[in-house]
Length: 246
Figure 1 (cartoon, rainbow, N blue to C red):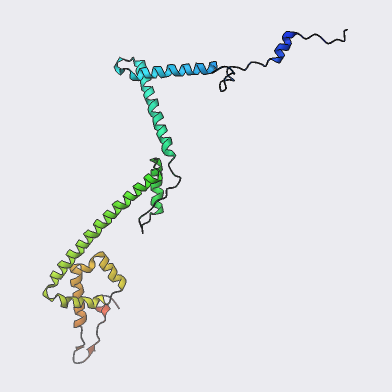
Figure 2: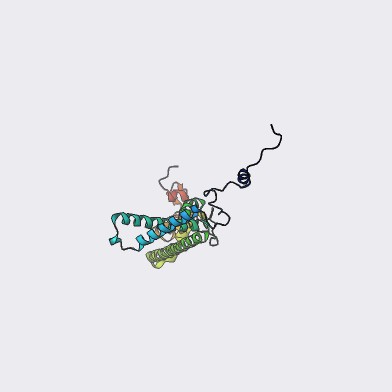
């Protein structure tokens, strides 16, 4: 047996020194050195170009000249394009939709938290930005302001008309009649007076005429001499509520 090393085959040495070729698939993201694009990239680009050309043909063609199959394809392309546009628009809008809306309110005004919990999902579903939602809130407050002002004007007109009708019913002795009304009013608490005035009852003809009658009862109540006994004067409760049991 020889101690000399076996001769190396030149072909084997060259194969060992040359790296294994990179597969076409492995170079899909990074072209082979000296090659602008891989075969796989070329195939994909070619298919994309053919698809775009076919879509262009179908979209630009007169639908009446297309076969049933091509019409179906055309409808599918239109739907895909519309869906892509809608998604792009939704994605763009979604970027401006806040997690929580922050509003600037008119001075002295507040928004009930329960109401906010109801309208926030609606704003989010509509994909409103904070600025867009603010405009909606501003509009709502403007509408409410107009409604309140209209109601206030109508109520004032109602009070004025009621007062005029009542004063006319009191007649020429209105000053005297109102003095009797005042006697009863003095028995009422400030809270009751506020309630009567805020509800409009303080101007109502029937109410004021009844108050005048009660006031007259207070003024005309006197001690009665029957010759034998003297009846004690009635208090305000007996006059106002004669049928109340003691």
